[in-house]
Amino acid sequence: MRGLHRRLATAGDFASIASITNHYIRSTAIHFGTEPVTADELRESWRQHEARYAWVVGEHGGEVVAYARASSWRSRTAYHWTAETGVYVREDRRGHGFGRAVYGPLLAVCRAQGFRSLIAAVTLPNEASARLHHELGFAAVGVVRHAGWKLDAWWDVGFYQLSLGGPEPATPLRSPADVWSVASAAPA
Image 1 (cartoon, helix red, strand yellow):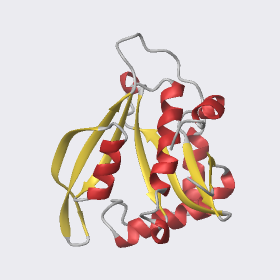
Image 2 (tube, helix red, strand yellow; image 1 turned 135 degrees about the horizontal axis):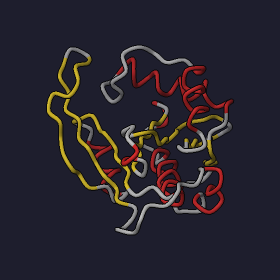
Image 3 (cartoon, helix red, strand yellow; image 1 turned 180 degrees about the vertical axis):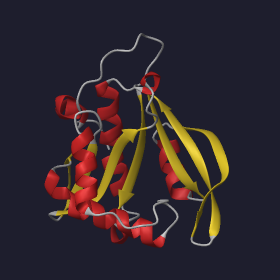
């Protein structure tokens, strides 16, 4: 995407990331959080897991306008090669392709690291997110009805899965920093 600089997140990005996230927490059911998060909370979570899970930011005009992140899907060792993904775009920049532009490199990083499966949870209805996941190769694998109560309503959650590998034996995961230069060259 023209004018968008994509890179791995750094500690200085978390004020912007918190601002983007808090819009979705306060105003939508897209994020099931009910209390705003601080930059320090998000930064600490990122620091604890930055050697394993990538956070990709997109800067436009010197401002972070979108981010995509990977995180733990389940804690048991057998799930070690599956991650949960998410993507968020600053409210005033939605609909311009910024989400896809940061999500593509995140998926490429996860693939290059050695993850075998990515899971995305999407609050339904959300046609834009469902379409994005489908276009990026995710398959709809199920819906949990009435999964969360927010904004005085029950919300369903659709689960989407992207398979990144075959039946080969599992190998150690590489860090996001180790694979960024190759993975970031992937098309948005």
